[in-house]
Length: 443
Image (cartoon, rainbow, N blue to C red; front, side):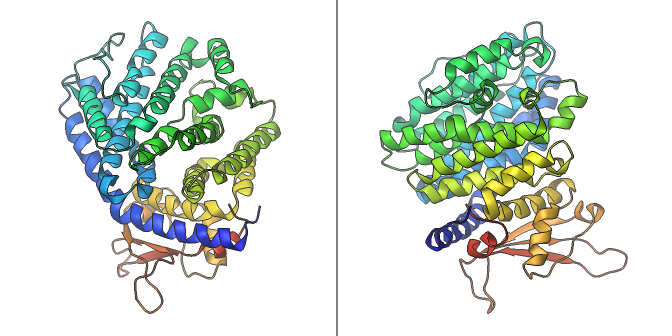
């Protein structure tokens, strides 16, 4: 799908500005918040809960960075509060999600009670809740209560919070219901989940019940609303339009892409995936492509559409850049979604590949690297062993004459000496999306 030149130029400028704001303003703040919650997790009294909290913070770093991506579009005066709320909510979501999957006499009640933390964090006037009422461990040293208090305090600093509060609480209720019902019968019996999802379906959609259920578990709409609350004026019409775009369309694609890259892992663990309800890989690819197409159509109709388009493409690029998206059982669906979104996902795929390589030693996404080299940039694909010890450095973009420019954002990987060679540096500059769109379409 090829965009008009004016729209491509607008998206190019928006991407460049958002990338610079994120890496230079949002990302450092996310790291500070993550360090704070690691310190708090280390103070948890119960050793099992402490291990769970610390492990989630270690493995979920990209979750926190992604949750706060929406803060790049928040007004600077309130951006820090937006980040605190988004990171705190994601820390809580990852933590209770893991606890709910642990052995328990009544997993549905336990999951529902644990996930009440989401609604509590988003409701500054809510009553106290015993989140561990049905869990075998409970001595967390005030960890969950501290997360709730931090999120509430940050939300109270946002001038538009009252305008979006009811929408966020409704989304939190859906998230808690989805997570608890998805745990029934060791995640193998989805009858109750199916009945619940069918009752949640908007009247103007013909989505399958598992697509509606997936959307209910997505937190993207909440993070968008938190960022929107940083503005002084948020109209009821805008908030309703955001909710209608993210639930069910974008949220559904979000959770199903997450399931896509986890599909082999879920199968090995004997866990049933919502994707298993599709009759064939071809049907799955077609439905995910439909979700991507309708999501793009919906976000383009929103106020500040370029912000939502970029965040949508960023979400998709995050999953499509994972090595698991290139496995035989997932590649058809991944290619279909990428083909629907077009070149807009390419820069995010490349940046996420570099970031993931720096964190976990993963290889760069082949599709992104092929585009980079095909586009005329100089670069080299390094091995997993080399990337595993390299560092990721976001730096301001500069033009050919060395002056700062908004035409792109630069990312540098630097590493130690290898086999007697001098220090090696690989750098990537992502420039105008007009050029990217020619590599495979446009958003």
